[in-house]
Image 1 (cartoon, rainbow, N blue to C red):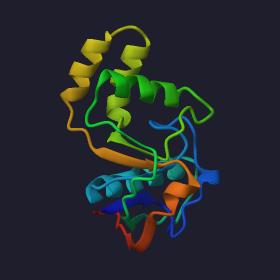
Image 2: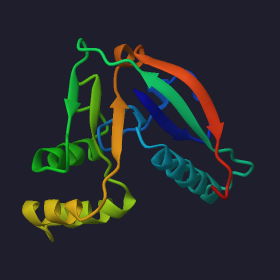
Image 3: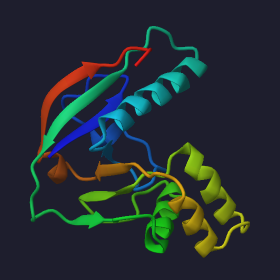
Image 4: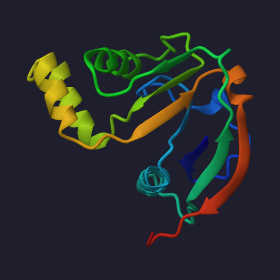
Length: 166
């Protein structure tokens, strides 16, 4: 399966040690099957770096072949469900990896959706209302790799530079 990782760097060999916690599925290397989503992510990362005063920032979609393997411990959320929502909240609130999965797959809680999640966290929305609101969005997918073992099934193919106007 071909997957994509949007970044401001060429990433031939992902390094789990330099990644952030407090993400949807915990500290990991995040990819998607949607190249347009990967391109959008490069722009988000670029804007964040520009706010910090960085200049001359490049944007890349790194392309990989993922070789599926039944030996890996994989959690797959088909859609935004109550189980998915609880899992995302648990990971976004923790400084530590809160699960033992090699790979987690499922919908992306992007910045727009995160406002709905904050409403849930603050008690404004019930679980049912939150799921209903989330399903109103077109949710992109993400595949996150959390162990060195899982990264062994990724084969780097190429990096495609994304221009500002793309």
